[in-house]
Length: 177
Image (cartoon, rainbow, N blue to C red; front, side, top):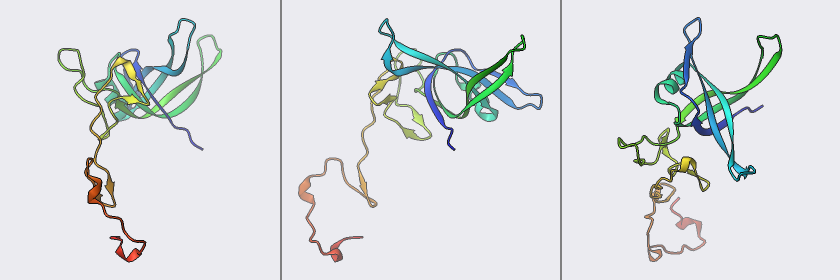
């Protein structure tokens, strides 16, 4: 079975960090995620508010580096939790248990205006938060220059003239690999 969810949105409030009786850190937060499709009667996109919980170091990381309005990427699993309210009614709630949380945007400059560079997720730049043509939060980022393609360990310059290549006969003995 597979239970994996990844969401990207903005925090609706500052994360709340608590500790269990044995001292384990747990952070609770809510992420506002715009739907990519459909609009309501007013022509506005609908938004889902998704409750999330992060344990241990992930919870401490979220509470330390994220605040209300921060763009966050949460990767984890969906969990349905049952509980009884104060009136004795059985309730159920769905929440994302975060395995990993990432910055969804680069750090703002000191003037509070524009962004400095494309964000980095685990060392990989993803084109500056422009996923599938959708610019999140109204901020369009400059895309990094594409890297030169690599074929079997040999790099080919991006603007390589086609005259540098020669056609090979069908004889496999001439192939370099």
